[in-house]
Length: 357
Image 1: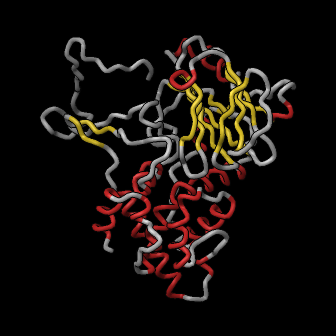
Image 2 (image 1 turned 180 degrees about the vertical axis):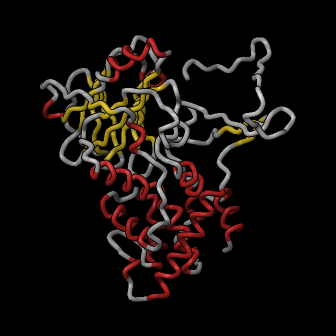
Image 3 (image 1 turned 90 degrees about the vertical axis):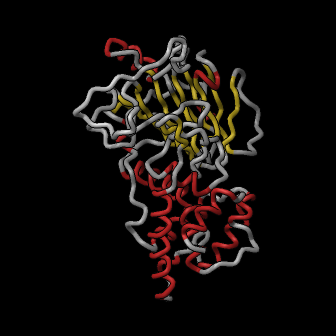
């Protein structure tokens, strides 16, 4: 299977036909598929390790004190949004999320599992803006809930949580600060104790730079093996894992350390080819010169699409929460340039139905 045919197949096939147990292919084909399949998991594991290395606390929010600026080397931050994050560890017990009444101010708290699925939201669109408490647990947790709480189940034992709080201009910044200081996390056993307020940093999103997954060559597949062992995928992924094992890729396996020099070389080449495919894959629709992605969902079955969406960093909203429009051309199909001034025109009654950002 060459790169062109693989790209076509990935857009048309279901996961079972793309990674089916009866599929036969070369070692390089299998390794390329494993690379693409594993991008979301490997990225999440690398961001979690980065947080630990930088002493970010578990089960506690870190929030920004300032809006994004050109000094933030991240992919596309909003300039009217305070960002925050937390890593949750659900292995011992559930974690309780408290949110204040935001008085109709837009905010979102996005919960992302270790496979980069945005499995739940708390915020104006999803739950409203009244005060609330949410018990975040592993799937299968069945103990009784404290009164007045709502349960949210996570597919994995670690969860990345991203917060966004709207700021309506410079004068509104103190009010937005006060709201995000009331986003708190507490172990369920300590729900009756005073919660710990978020820690503040100038910019929380600097914790999520664009990462180079192929820098380590074949060691990418070692990272994938560690991630698979710590965060087993759902049963629907058994077929691709059976296929990956033919290339020495799987839970707790370190294929880069194989004594087979040809295997290590093939894995390196496969990682480079697959990474190029991920970066070149088109993820947006084009309408009237504008590009927008309508396909981001809580669980994205198309593995190549999911890898491409996440490669620049975590936290792309599902389409129901936010749409990201961009263009590089004007109405005359000429490239945009800083030497020209532009006007964006909407006909009467045709302004977009946007109520935040």
